[in-house]
Length: 86
Image (cartoon, rainbow, N blue to C red; front, top):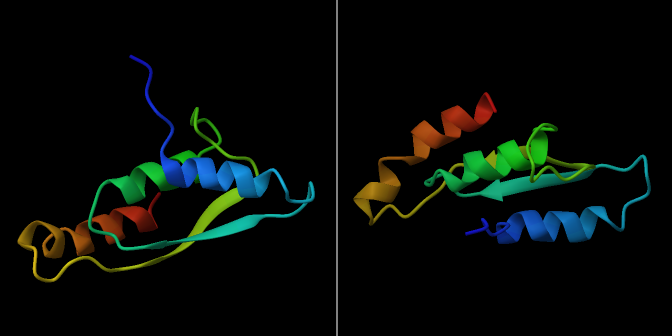
């Protein structure tokens, strides 16, 4: 079974396709309560990643999640910290 391309990666590809060659699409992530933020940052920032999008780069993230949901609330800081080193 072939892995599906994540929707944020598809959107970045679509946006980056319309950029001039020297332009950079600076991307922000809202919410850091899932491992998806790490996967997206790897795909967008890592040139070796098969999902890499030339010209797109995650440059900022807003730490957030759902305070009412323990699994979300307890993971925000961990994924935000990991994202800083990605």
